[in-house]
Amino acid sequence: MKLAKIKILLFVFSLACSKTIFAQQKPYSASNDSILLLNGDQFTTHILDTLNDVVTLKNPNGKKKNIKLGNERIFEIHFANGMQKMYYQKDSLQGDYFTIDEMSYFIKGEQDARKGYKPWWTTVGGAATGFGGGLFGSILAPIPVFAFLIACNIPKVRIPHESVSNMEYLKHDTYIMGYERVARSKRSFNVMKSGVVGLVVGIVVSICYLK
Image (cartoon, rainbow, N blue to C red):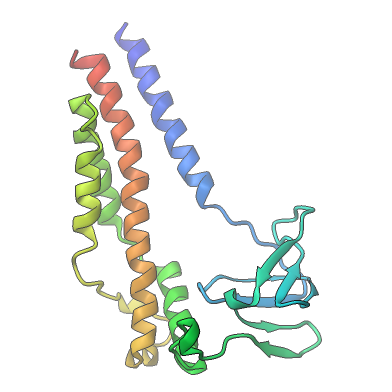
């Protein structure tokens, strides 16, 4: 009986892990034109047209359906023929307060944080609070995870120097702002991801062994 419970526990845990890992995968494939978005995402594909304030491009994941992006989401495009088009412009009426240079540093901060910031402690904390909450086996079980989610975003983001692609970037406030934006997002995502896994394991343990 205990062996069967352990098998169920391992199956649920592996299923939860596989879903969270799969959700993070973004298999971009290289082609011709390079497009840089304001959120820091950058990939290469084939631009089909740039009409009516919308850029239409082939799906870089290889799917048949094309992707349409509004100009307001794009920073710049480098075309395969060597031409470059800047889409971002400072416009305080639209909430775009940064100059082009300032936004460029902001995006670099986003990219460096996405590549190099690894808040492992939020993963551990999320799993621990989720597991602990799951042991209660009640509708209040998720509360510890949400409490930790709020708490983990209170501390100031410390930028590890090894994650900075160019130390000169740290002299620019907008670089730090971009880095912090992604860093806090990664903290939250890690807590929720590991918290769900820990919660499921805690509930299974509670059902199988504590009741």
